[in-house]
Image (cartoon, rainbow, N blue to C red):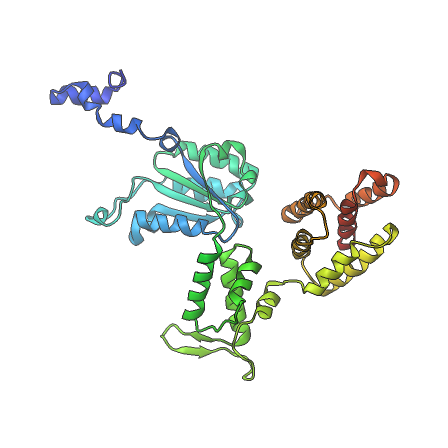
Amino acid sequence: MASFFDIKARKAAAANGTSAAKAGEPKQAARKQPWVEKYSLTCCSTAPPGTGKTSTILALAKELYGPEMMKARVLELNASDERGISIVREKVKDFARMQLTNPPPGYRDRYPCPPFKIIILDEADSMTQDAQSALRRTMETYSKITRFCLICNYVTRIIDPLASRCSKFRFKSLDQGNARIRLKEIAEKEGVRLEDGAVEALIRCSDGDLRKAITFLQSAARLVGAVEKGEDGGVDKMDVDDDVVSIVSVKIVEDIAGVIPRPTVERLQKAMQPKSAGATYQAIAKVVEEIVADGWSASQVVAQLYQAVINDELIPDLGKNKITLVFSEVDKRLKNIQYTGRAVLNSYAVKMTYEPMVFSTSQKTLVWIELAIW
């Protein structure tokens, strides 16, 4: 029945003197293909930073098109810098409707060169909603000759009409084993000496972000004056004092990563557990003032304080569950940079004053911390 409605197949069958059913046989194999893949217009790769999303799609594009056809078939844009609707209407649309160029003779023997182009939008979750809406229409119009790849850290920031048209690929953070091997390999090639535990410190401070770990390693190598290999195969000594020992230690890694010293975190944690309820704010405010004066990051304070609280065996599990909910709310506001202002925190403080039984001790403590940071 399907071949009966396929006019092209019927004409070809009539011309070749064969039946329409035989002409439509190749389409039987296409029916076995999942419909999500068959009718998908684009893909969406989502994961935390530094997990290899962009590297993976670029490596795939190079395998498909090779070095000679990459420029003609692949367009890569960083949507965080070019995120307005004008970019979609100009750069993206112009490239999407551009006709395909044929590869040189014999080129397909080395690379597949499929009959479509690829547009890679890195950090697509930074695009405005108007730009995403315009992109949806462009994806539908030029789907036959152009495929889209959206790379984002938070898929929830992609509008639903756009996300529903994507095949989603979620990347996990790199496991510590592979990250450790890669960091040691880079250190060996660059002539960097590492103290015992330095690689583990890099992995811990980067929080699963291999790109960040490599950046920390390079910064630490420059700080200690490690020998860097030049482009001509020679070696260049970095400009540092001669009396500095060129070895990357755990402390150097933590200093570069902005890790707050353990005594500071312990003082803050101790201030959160005062002997009397009335002394909560004053004790916390004093420690927070010191943290702000030292220039420590608020996100780093929350991250290390969270680890300290979770690993504290004196806090019962039920209490840790309640504290985790408060931490998650604080972390969300820090990540999204969508604070409603000090007025909201003040309203919480006022409500805690007049309705103290509504809030738990952990919730009160976190509100006082935020007030002090603000």
